[in-house]
Image (spheres, rainbow, N blue to C red):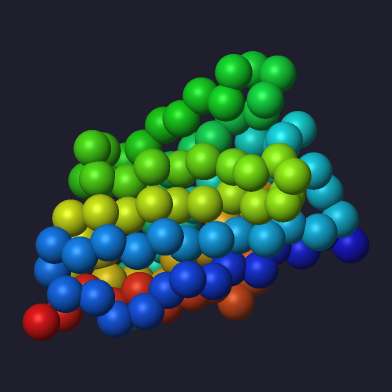
Length: 119
């Protein structure tokens, strides 16, 4: 059974940084296209970032609002995907989820990790 467990969220002041982790089981993140999404209160879940497979060059893509501030990466030895977030803004406040393409297509999501940006 494929499972993704997100962690690393918390309360941070504007301008601060956090690193989110997504520990995978039942699948190999190196051979999966991986995504981060977020969902703010009262809003739909939204796309944040993509990391392609190792064999395709581990290319990255981001929604415009986080370009230059967020970085998606993976650690193959730990089968974990990360989202390094810097220069955080109040509008980044949301629950953050990671997933692969199949999970997104099947609307299968983990519990996510809460990020709150506030002074």
